Length: 132
Image (cartoon, rainbow, N blue to C red; front, side, top):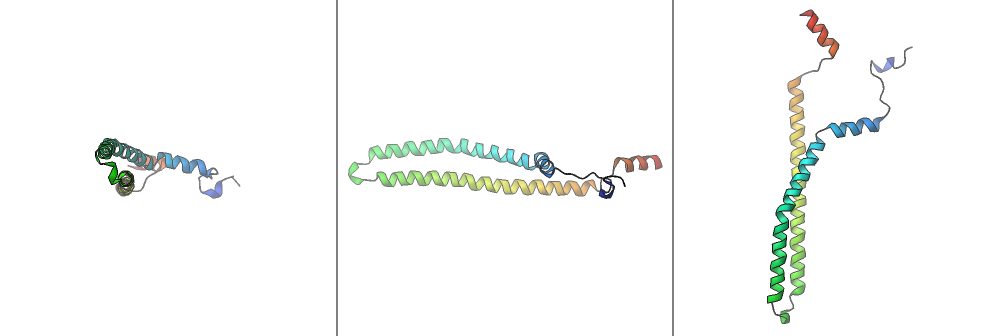
């Protein structure tokens, strides 16, 4: 009995971790992660000047408001709340972008599979060429 004959012409794959890692490396998820990283960076580059401007305005407010009103605690809370809202909006939009891009690539891969049809092996292609 020939070794590997009962595996139907294919040798068995023993190292599953390497093959799954290679599939992840070659798949479209790497492209999606690059796009998400770029969108996150662009959002943060947009929001950093906005946050700086907000904090500068709050510093001006703390100097203009009289100390007798004792609003420093409220202003600190508002600054933290604005910071939380900005970072939460960036996180939510990043998750939404990931959802959209993953579905876009999945749909594109399905459309590509439907248009390509069944794949032929090299031997079948040679046989078809010799027959015609």
